[in-house]
Image (cartoon, rainbow, N blue to C red):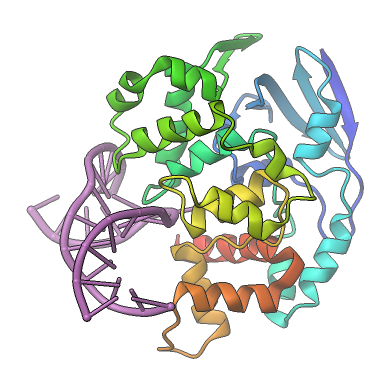
Length: 289
DNA sequence: CGCCAGGGTAGAC
DNA sequence: GTCTACCATGGC
């Protein structure tokens, strides 16, 4: 089926699909022809394209609510922009320079967890290949037109597949064991990712639970919380964010631990710290390349 | 070959 | 609480 969703107009931060996906926190988008992009969202293969004020998509079923949630079409982006711009002059400049930045709401926290366990000390392109590889090895094929993709395997599927396919992928840094262990925790009901996504589960408790997973520390727990568990105050600190913070908010030569940087971010950026972090990330990556 | 990439961990003080 | 060595792989 082919469908169209209206994109709410925004004066300061208009929606730009290509840029949103390019700087995306979801590793599973692939460009197609004529402005279309192929993705796999929570088991659904989907093609999306922007036609001015509308989001067009092709899929096997109605994905209106899923896509609205994913791209945050139901959210007041102008209000978030205004909040970020009011934090300090640098943030105001970044909102103007990168108006397309969005923190997407990924529908599958399990996939997000595995993807970011694989992200440690890897380049974005490589992470993308690893996540795709896990889907191809253990997931199920899904087809839309001539496009064949693979669903990301559920914890049950990962556990049934056992250690062999993961170790054969040579993920390094014991990531194969971390993923299998996390799958076991979810399967045994020791880890309830859906409960953590509820607004009644606050950010601190969410992060504490995620950090109990092997291979998940402050940074990756914050990525999972921010990108798939609806915790906009989560502030993942990686090498880029560290550099951006040090150059813009502290005098040259200052030495701050990650703990001090987390405390600064919480106090200075507040409720939408994660969005502020995405802006810093974009600017730092842009400056580096 | 050397270096680094969207870190995490155990063990040491 | 903070510092350190080590974990493993691919791309340039």
